[in-house]
Length: 230
Ligand code: GLN
Image 1: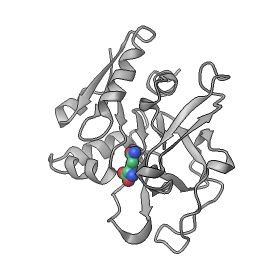
Image 2 (image 1 turned 90 degrees about the vertical axis):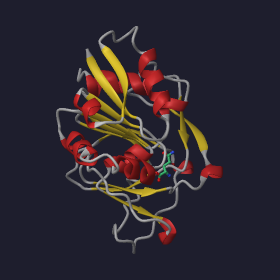
Image 3 (image 1 turned 60 degrees about the horizontal axis):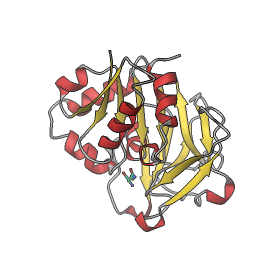
Image 4 (image 1 turned 30 degrees about the vertical axis):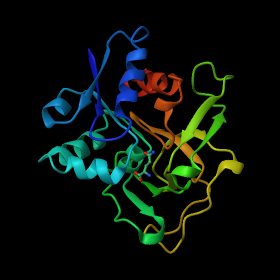
């Protein structure tokens, strides 16, 4: 059995569990379980960090002694598959910024390596949107995948040596405006801004919410390529 943990502290974790369960006819060996404790994390071969609110997820995690440290170790272990969606992508970054100086930045777990993100760059809750994307790497690629963005983070910049694979990008007309260049994160890279699905080895991030799309093809990609490593 390949145990896939879904961090279940806050946010859209139950949806990820359901979508992974829907893949079981195809992948008999996988089992998805909610993770709240160190003991549960120790059972996992792979981990999903869901969307929600990154500050809340990291604050709740910090109430369990040793949990954040164990999550960081998991995220940085090249053998372990980890997928961060939206808030989870922020936690997989090494640094993040947010406009207006409203909130204190979240401490990133640096799971991708060399990725900086800008939180809420696509706007507030009311500015949530959906974009149908043609994604060549998923199954049935001629059928568009409906990507859903809810107060989503954007890639601020990737370090040139970060060697990430870009699986999907937003077309120009959906891209957010550039974050400020005078922030502590430094100069944003306009070329990185529309990158909404990245993979590096067994690590993956999506700034959208595949677990709300009604479509399991991103989960299938992750199980196939990152968890089972085929
Ligand atoms: N805006 C949230 C954050 O900063 C992320 C939103 C989401 O996960 N849908 O954590």
